[in-house]
Image 1 (spheres, one colour):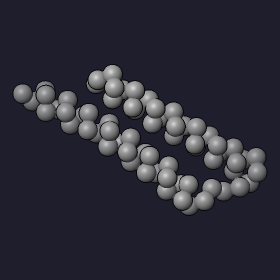
Image 2 (tube, one colour; image 1 turned 45 degrees about the horizontal axis):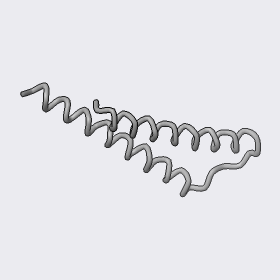
Image 3 (cartoon, one colour; image 1 turned 90 degrees about the vertical axis):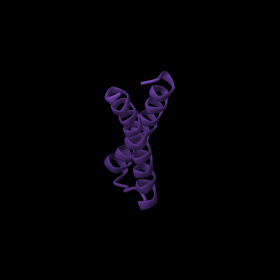
Length: 66
């Protein structure tokens, strides 16, 4: 995996962890549930991360086959 892709994945994961921590704290401390749009945003970020990771897996698989 190239360094650039690794950095992108790391950035995505850090962002997602922070967002999920904030949601968790708001639920635990304030009994405040996130808006559906916030949840959709996190899910979209997770989809983007999955596509980034799967793209790397497909590239590695194609390279190994050659």
